[in-house]
Amino acid sequence: MKFIDIWDLKVAAGQLTVWRPTAGPPHSSDWMPDARPASYLQEAHLNDALNAAAGGRGPSWLATSFELPGSLDEYALCKAFTDWINRHEVLRSRLEPYADGDVLGMYRSTLRPGAVGLMRAEHGHVDDPRELSARLEAVLDGSTDPLAWPSFVFLTVRRPDSTTVCVGLDHHNVDGYAVLLIAHEIRELYAAALDDRRACLTEVGSYLDFAGPERQDAARLHGDHEAVRQWREFVAEGGGRLPEFVVPVADGDAPAPVPQTGGLDWLLDAEGARAFEMECRRGGGDFFSGLLACLALAGQRLAGQEDFRTVTPFHTRSERRFHRSLGWYVGIAPVGVAVRGGDVFAQVLKESGEALRRARPLACAPLARLTELLGIPLEPRFMVSYMDIRSLPGAGRWAEWNATALRSRRIHPHEVYLWLMRTREGVYLSHRHPDSESGRAAVLPYLAETARLVRRVAAGDPPSAVPRTHPHAPAARAGGGRGKESTPC
Image 1 (cartoon, rainbow, N blue to C red):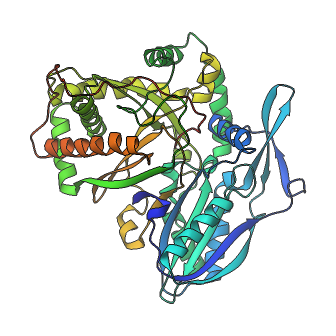
Image 2 (image 1 turned 45 degrees about the horizontal axis):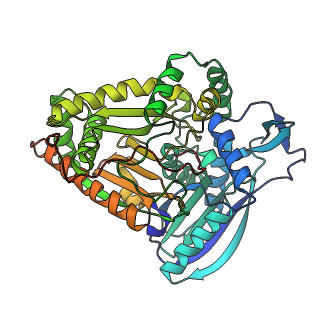
Image 3 (image 1 turned 180 degrees about the vertical axis):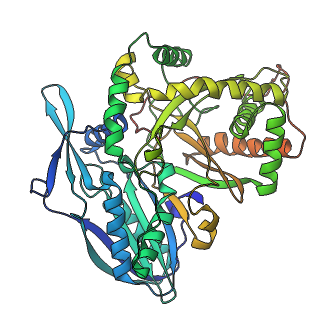
């Protein structure tokens, strides 16, 4: 399944329908007071949205689209949507920010299973694919407000022989991994409704049950905790902030907001991915450490960067009941890889593996909690994510379903996010960065060099770092501006 920007989605013409969840008003008896707290990620995300509300804010949703074959059975699809809402409690819960003096908090209320209905609105037949894409985006932007319920929406584009289904949710409901589960679940619920049978889906836990223990664990962190100490050192080495991209992508400390652009590049096919993994294992590493080594080498070869620094997400689905649960189960960890002039790939691979092993335990500390303990804002600017999604439910049929994961537009002058995904078809790199002259000039050559190095490893010709003297390389900038921004996916 590809992970792409919404503007790259192509949907064939058809009858557009919007399906919005409905329930009683916020203070009606439908909504039960719920003492379970918001997770740290949810609270930080909603507070950011609240602070930005007066000046306007961009969308923060994730979505997926996929196709159903044949003539649509609207009753079965409606049942599939409501059964899916009943399956995932996070969709039936709302968080309302409140202030008690100087203290901000979140009040939660939750709907029982079966309390959510659907209101269907027909938007007519849309022939122009560009207009259809724009209308889908407008509905997703307008129906996923993190400060309101519902913060998710369903759309369908119906044709005589097939229907495209699109499901969009604000980020506080879902992470990038969970988005990849949606097509399989809703298609199975739809098939079960058509056949009048029970859906073949495993039971899942509730993200609401995860958030309380997460906050309890985070509350035990203190200034002398090993994770906090290592984070403090990492931030101090970066001049008091999280890493920037390997070379500047914005001008000055407070540049004007810049729309982001992005794309998707296939690095390897399935055979090449197996060859790449074999080379990495031969060198004592694994797939992610091999990719990280190539990223670090690209920074050194293009920019003379001998200390590759980024942050990377790790999942926090530590219990089996949360493995297929909808929610934002992500921790962020700092990664630093030394690349000395003349280092061969095997050495950088070893450094990368050690960096990931050091990083993994540090994801237990939520960024919002670290901000409290360190007393400084921690705003990710350069993130590298890796997922092996070959074994996810439905992965073998995603191509048949035309399943795609989507992200909303973003406006930011500094952020550079890279998502490396291993699928059954191979490995791709999806990316997002400022759509400016400096952003394109910095990021695109780096991505091309990374792709070239990955393919060299797969071909059995592992690269090395250039000699320490590198007169034409620009100096990598350690810092940059500190604009307010949301936690990444």
